[in-house]
Length: 620
Image (cartoon, rainbow, N blue to C red; front, top):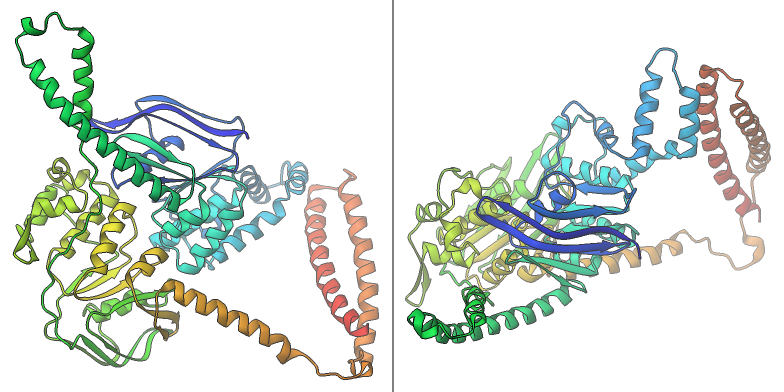
């Protein structure tokens, strides 16, 4: 197989912070690789370096000559005055550039070079390009193609950028968190698209089902090194644990030997002057190993929640709408003690608004919502907490509490609590402004959990969190002695945490489903199959004899004869126009007019051929 990308001995640092050192990586044709690391360990930096958007200290990066590369950034940017469709043409793709040339030529007096452009458009099948863009945008639920980029939300902009990358049909796709801001239907569509796409793939994502089903290899950045696992995410988990056990055993062994060798090194120089020099050199190598930290395993965090009574919240006949968009329509629900509920649905169906009504940020149009007196909300919102960049990480947590009660007379200091969420003692004394986006989200999560709530409301908690943090959060929520409501598009997370689901279908329609996401997906699949099975029966015409079959009416017979004549005439006209276009005798205006007419004829032939087939089946 051809090698698309080769990285050799790559090193990147920011001042004293080394992200990775002398790492090497190769990506072959059709290979699909998932990249995993804790937040702040260099995932996005590595992708930016490969895409040529960031420099590096040393090493070598080489691509196969002529390779088409598509890169989806974590936070893409486009000029605000562009429309959605125009933004999709902002690409290095040759077809996109050709269409831009064509559009520019159309708006230039005299249309210079139009004949050559038309030939190139025909050769590269550029007429179909816009249709493809619209199809992918529709799959990603962007339907207003003329909307200005400046009016798009961050999530919509990310989806436009994703469409832009996919339409390029690159041979190597580099995707940074492609599932962020996608609802479940879009995520499953993208999963299927990438799985069957022949392009090579290098991807950062926290969606573990997505990793498992799309990627055939996982690479991990850990301790400034790169580790490769030739298998999917489930295989990676198994082999990573084996690596950690082996590494911890090696560190323990090195520590035992280190104590003996340290004694020898502390003796007078004369006492070891006759010893072999290699032993002294070996000591320093041993010291490096012995001073490595053992990797923490099976981290659990059991913070004591405050007492919660039997009455949680009771919603009766809630209504909420914005203009012609209905969020809640006569919604009633009694939330039970220790319930763990998931909320799913397409973007824009009102999930976040429902959460804000529950927490009191937004008022319903009518209806009553009674919250129990003992309920203490811990609310993790999509917008997050705005930190002062000049505050140290440890001070952010200490401003809330110095000590966190675990129950059973156990407690944690603020520093120990942060270590559970993967903030090392060194990182705790960094200023907030130095944290990556994912690290800020992790810090925000700490501030929510340590406030001792008994009802957690989490709105998209999985966005921008690394997989290690998600494991800790999942375990915390499973053992949490309180109530939980989670809005998330992360299927693995929902399966692990929730036991009940509300499905927001739009315009106030909400389905109450007892089970997790996978249970709901299986149920929905069965329902769709049953509908498909019943459809032919409902539409079938009962017949017991051959002569019961419907015949063409007189009007339909005349229509069939006319369609045959029309198709013949259109085919002849199309042939004549194509010959004229290739003759080289037409003016630029004639070329433009006749090219448009050829496209119109093609559509007419397709429409009439479809109708001819319908009538022919009745005739038979």
